[in-house]
Length: 97
Image (cartoon, rainbow, N blue to C red; front, side, top):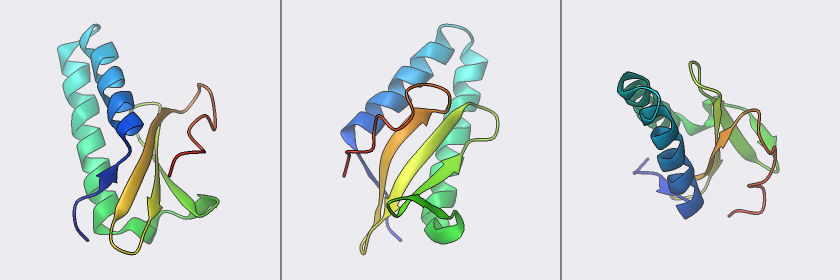
């Protein structure tokens, strides 16, 4: 499968999370981005590995950071809908396509 399609708000969420970690520790920010990049690569490699949850959307729970990557498998690509904090505002992203 080709590169993922990222919802513009998912890009903003990733940038905001990275900034939050940078303000605390460059090392933590680097580790966050490394894990995020690895997670997205895993999703692209086998998008149906993670079970469908909400309306056919799937989720990848990051291991070391409290974030969930919500995505949707489409015919031609994978659409990352949200890089959502696991403990804040659940479901705020659900109207994204």
